[in-house]
Length: 72
Image (spheres, rainbow, N blue to C red):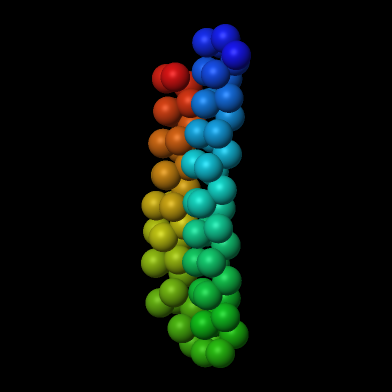
């Protein structure tokens, strides 16, 4: 394998791994929030903002992975 192929493979693995974990985290965050709201509908206002913040922080990790791919 030449250097260009290794670089391309590294970029692919970085974005695949860097996107997979945040996707799982966002799914888990939203799933648990919806489960909690289903059990206690009055908690919607208390859960919405922390759920969005948690999803945004998890998404930031995916954006960092994308930045790493562009810098490689």
